[in-house]
Each structure stands twice: as structure tokens, then as C-alpha cells.
Image 1 (cartoon, rainbow, N blue to C red):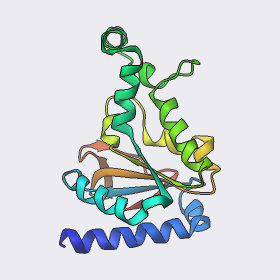
Image 2: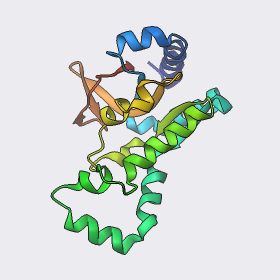
Image 3: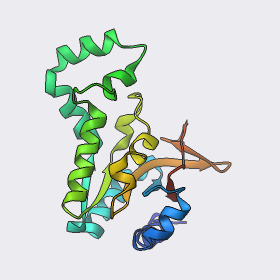
Length: 182
């Protein structure tokens, strides 16, 4: 199937899922999220089309930019030192229960801002989460996401092999609390 035909069908399916939010929550085990799966090598094409399609209805949240902002918050040297000291538990650096602002908190804040502005939050460039210990399920199960009037859409570079979803084409991924558009 050509990129044009395939992406047109995927976007039609995505729009249908957004419009039928009650059904979405039934199919997503009570969740309120949509994983929009596409081949990682086609990410720029899908993002370009999404920007044209959604315009002002959505808020695009670039996770790679948030990661850079998180590192810049304390400076590269301090981040590097802290990360190296926590190398056996990197998830503590990016997602912890302490009151310090971490990457996970920054992501949730941006999602909450989109909801407050009555926009659909769309997470993009989430490949930046690889190695942080932040899983899509943690984001999808956050109370702000679960109870929102709009679904969270996660643009998800992945492929499906033998009915298994593979994030970035190799890491097993969860489809719990969401519906998959592929």
C-alpha cells in the first residue's frame, strides 16, 4: 500500500476514534488514549499531515523538546553527573515521586495545559522517551488523561510483528488503556 493511501486511511480512522470517545473508553479498558502507529522512518510525513489536519484543534507536545528543556534546567554538567550517579536506575532521574520537577511532570503539565485550553493533546517525537523509564502506560493512566473530555493522542513510531506492537520497531509496547490506530 502506498504511503498516501495508507496514511489517508489511518487519519480517517483516527478522526473516527476521536469523535466516538465513549466507544474509545470502552475499547481502551477505561482509558482515554489513542496510539497512532506508523513506521519510524515515515515520522516526518505523518507529523506534517497531522499539523495540517488538526491545526488549532490540537496542541502538539514535542517530547524531544521537553527532554532538552529538562536537561537545560540544571545544565548539562549537573545533569550528566546526576545521570551517571543514577545509571542503574535511570527512571528515577526522569520520573520520580519526589516534589522536584522531572521529565514526566513536564509532559503531564503540557498535556494538562492542552486540556485546559480545550485542545486535543498530541504527543510527538516520543522516541526520546526510550531509556528514560517513562512508559506510555504511565502517561495514559495519569488521572488528568483518564478523566479528560478529550483523548490523548500519542504519535507512536512502531510496527506490528505477529500481532505484537514494537515501539521503535524493536521494544515490546503496551496497548492497555488505549486503542491502536495502525
